Length: 392
Ligand SMILES: Cc1ncc(COP(=O)(O)O)c(C=O)c1O
Image 1 (tube, rainbow, N blue to C red):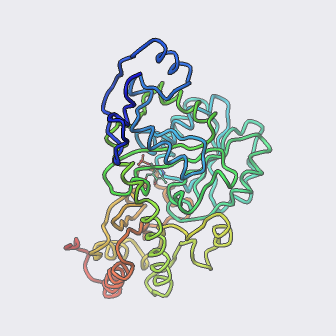
Image 2: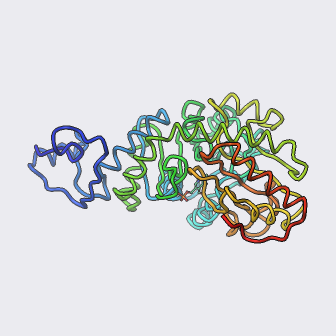
Image 3: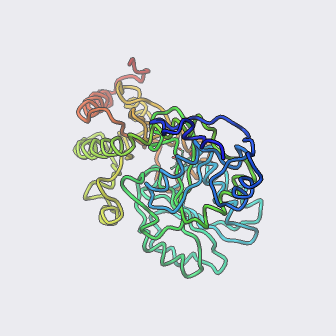
């Protein structure tokens, strides 16, 4: 047998090698058989598997307490692979409005394929049981939710799902596995946009799905069929990001808590959603489901209207006005104008997002630097300073 692609020199390199090969030479028919029978993690063709990608899959599975993990090209590819693998014509999907906006687009495709869909507000999650049908096959949710950080009780969802034998799928991108492991709380599958905190540096796109070995096999089949396998270079970047993931997640959550406590006393903040605040309606459940803090994501309303919020965002100097989340830099966006832009207008506000709502993703900058930035931007709102692009 030839050298393992990850240990080509006998000693293991400290950095996971980027294996860019599309295909691999079969050194014997015996090796081909072992690969085909699943006896060894052998490699034949990149769409099937890649050693750099496989390394990252093992690490994410460990973070989520899963038996295995399938990594994909993007977070939306991961979500779509889950839908395609487990839903068929006549099945019923319950999905929450408070999930990443592109799920709505995918839902239109699923409806074309004959899947029945019920949309619920996370605030209605305690009435989930009323929406379960005999053909309910999947419940898809985020907690904390996107962007309003609403909290859903996973034990209650599990109970409701069991009535119909439905799968519970949790997008854990907002929470991150540092703070929450949905598989230990009743979920069957965990989905990630690894583009976010797992990668963490705004330089790669990837998705991940973690669960049992059986789910791994089913999802691997879908990925191999449709070709959503991540490239080796992105997998390498993700692997590097994972080395500092816990440190970054810890720093983000600590700063987010400090920022939320600061914002709680600001007159220009008319609504504040952060599950680490004791007056957050989901705080008690979040405290049960999450550990080591409440993550780096929050949402809040600035002033009265769109002008106020634009004034605020434009005045920020340290925090970047950009979409995405979970990165080293703090990022802020107005969901109504960005992440939810492609939804029909009425769907953009249906579950509580307002035109003056911002979503803040706290980065790893010192908390006092971020608070200082927010303070001066709020002063601009109070003074009614004209909106102008910030000079960084
Ligand atoms: C919570 C959540 N899930 C999934 C996605 C989709 O991930 P990607 O952009 O990697 O496709 C996003 C993207 O912002 C997200 O915020």
